[in-house]
Length: 360
Image (cartoon, rainbow, N blue to C red):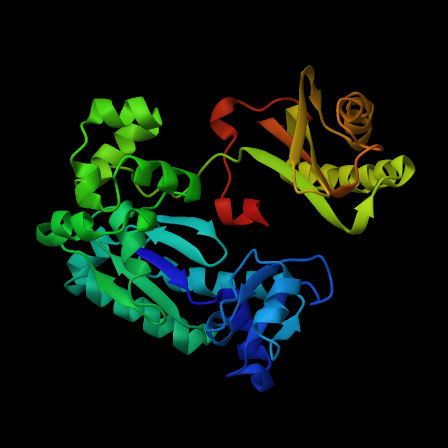
């Protein structure tokens, strides 16, 4: 089962502030700022507004839009309430973000009668207890469940049964396949692939030749096959923080001050998670939106702000910072290792955490 909350951030705002109900709500930056839309209500979507769109563009599409800043504490609290509902039905929960998760409800479905009934109960309890609307997709694997949850939004419940799965996938537009982004979609169109049926005509070897390791995945899901289990825990891969400037920046002193603040934030996350890193990456996005990253992997552990600030100058020198205007800058740490209470590296088996707690 895949549960996806409908317009989550915007719905929390409309729930908490009744005067926003029925209005086109945009959660994100101010309309005159360089910020982007984090989420928007269905009323705003009718005007073509969508997430990741510049707020300046959103206000042009919908002049009546109400812009509100994000309240992540409220969203986390709502997410916790939603997960309390999930836990009554299964302990096999794989959160993907605050507002969506995979659930394996095989055992509970056997008790209740069907997975469809479990989905109905979960949706009803989320509405009653958290006062938010969820959509659910039910099938026999992750790929199909995720597609199903998007089929009948908002307040949807869509079931793809095993006997109808292959025919369903054959008629599905390739852009709706989970894992197919715009670049891959264009490449597939160039090969004459527009639907699942088109994809199914290619052999596994042909798809691997065109798409590398992903070719095997495309070959299998075109036939309704996805054997990935629901993983209740997963390993965290990176920790980072970034910021977008109000106006493009050339001043090296301001760039360095910003990196110092970001390093402090990343250090705080490292400390809270009791983790250290081996790799640091500097991320810059220039005024023309070109992305530039520079990385360095160290034999010794990166555990503090001072460690990061000792490595960043060399990375910064390998960029055009100071000569090309910058709109965004960020720091990411990867190759993470868990530390024990003494500050030493913990055994590899312990380097695991609950994904919901690690994403925000």
